[in-house]
Length: 244
Image (cartoon, rainbow, N blue to C red; front, side, top):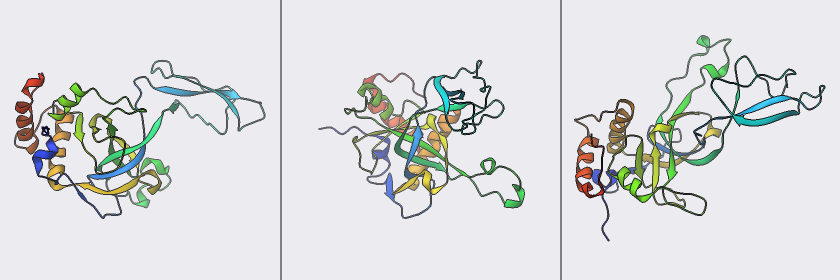
């Protein structure tokens, strides 16, 4: 059986994921978190009003598509349990506990004297994470088409990174989505750290990948450019159409 080369296999054997004993999030840390599915069309919870005019707890609600040009109106009788301020709306999203990669730890805490009197959310620190999605199809997961996975394996797209995670699960391969980078609250209830982190060489490749994702250009003097050239040449028979 021929093992197809990947970015990870061309770094160094067993040098992509390493053990990490840190008890606080580190850049490159593998963690678990509930992250929302990013729907193509967002949905909103529309508060229609109180079930009873004197009841501030129960309310009639419905879920509908959120249209940027037609936001829902606030109910005539406000509901204390679901307050709506100004032009705010309630988003409705499904979420799933999945592996995430910590890309940034959010910067230093803002001193109390600089945030006195302001809501905590304005300066609450956040982690920056990207989610992993299972590649292989199961009874509960559609998976990704193998032809597409082969394109990702040879680094054809800046937003996808094919990987094999050092944690248990129902899939041997996972897809890191760099176009799903998002904030995650830094409270300990928001995530669960694993004992695995990217190695220094892996982080260097990831840095090149993030530049590629943000600018459309791979750093010419970086490791990713060299590895990608090798992989694209190796996979020429699959008809890759978008080399850098």
